[in-house]
Image (cartoon, rainbow, N blue to C red; front, top):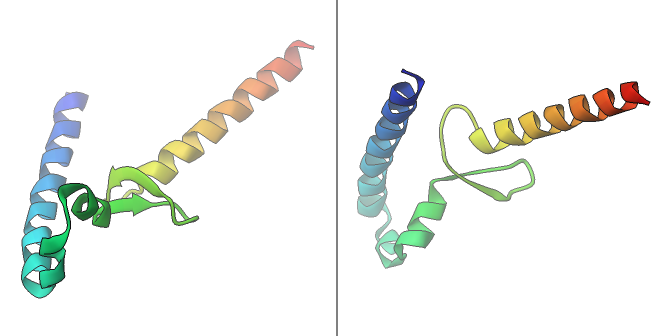
Length: 85
């Protein structure tokens, strides 16, 4: 069920991005000069530092979310290790 929801969200996101790409191409002819990788990067999320996360732009910034999750998990591990001493 979780995988189905995730796939549905991914599909809706890709569908929306396809529509946006068509509109961008009509509005900004220079986008037609970009290769697929360059065009795809236009729609990637960015961190607060301006680095691309590799995730497509969505309401929830997945790159920031997973970064925060990793930091939180690391802090729990560090706390657990300190308690073992």
